[in-house]
Length: 168
Image 1: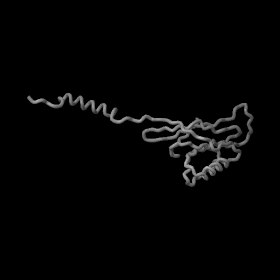
Image 2: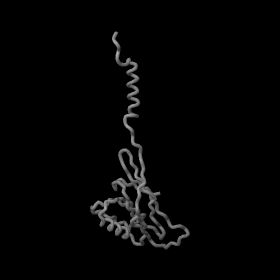
Image 3: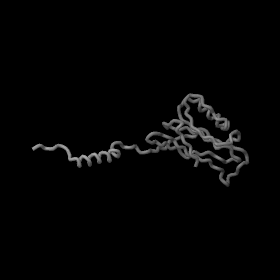
Image 4: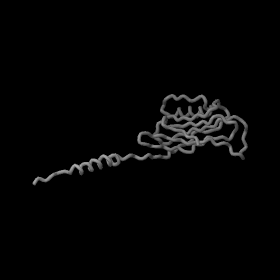
């Protein structure tokens, strides 16, 4: 008597079904999205009285030795800080947040945090910030001010084009 090797047709059907059904779930593991807090330092901040820009400006740039255009709408104090940064030979990413023109003193740009989000196909840096208005008990002058903040990212492996700003 010959012994049959293999499975019956019905058994092969179930085997094929199990393979096709479970394979997508077990063949490759998907790396979950991860988030990492990025450390940063404020390298320039101010509320200067002199400025031309009325509208807020936010951008990130990498100090890569290239000549970067400094937006005309930034206050002169922020432009000078960026020129000093460009004179350095580091390759750090810098973020600039200019809140636009305000009608009194006491406004301040505050960077709340920077979080690096690593996903399957992309990595992006989300910067959360807000513009604090003067507290009611603080005496203010009725003058035009131009608050800004410039921060340097510490050890973040991110391209400046993958930075997203979220005002809170």
